Length: 148
Image 1 (tube, rainbow, N blue to C red):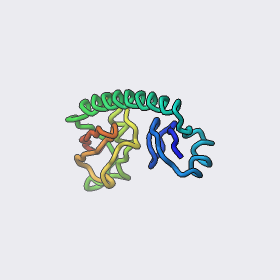
Image 2 (spheres, rainbow, N blue to C red):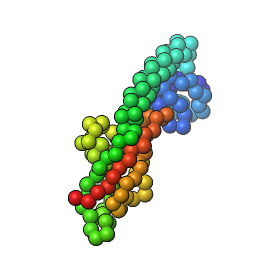
Image 3 (spheres, rainbow, N blue to C red):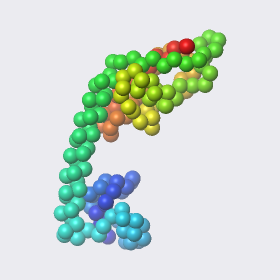
């Protein structure tokens, strides 16, 4: 069964894609939930319009992500934390801490789910953290963990 996807579905395709799915999957899951419509001549034209809009939105998102990445590149973000003896932290630095520090020091708002913090930052020092801003754009942020 050929269907036109009305939303992005992991493992199947993106909005506007024409995909071939099993009859049962289309009839029992995709069509009743409004995730897809049956592919006909009219819907194929509609799918082309969906893809064009998706591509324009994707290009705009990529451009804004590139701008944010260039603003973050080369900056060092200081995170002040409580420490014990020998520079060990009480707890660890999380993605939420990194997002809050970036927001305070640069005014750039990031999504904590898109921040990849290396294995448990539990000591004072300098670390590199990856921020996935777009599927094609990734920025590396240097964070400096210091004691209060």
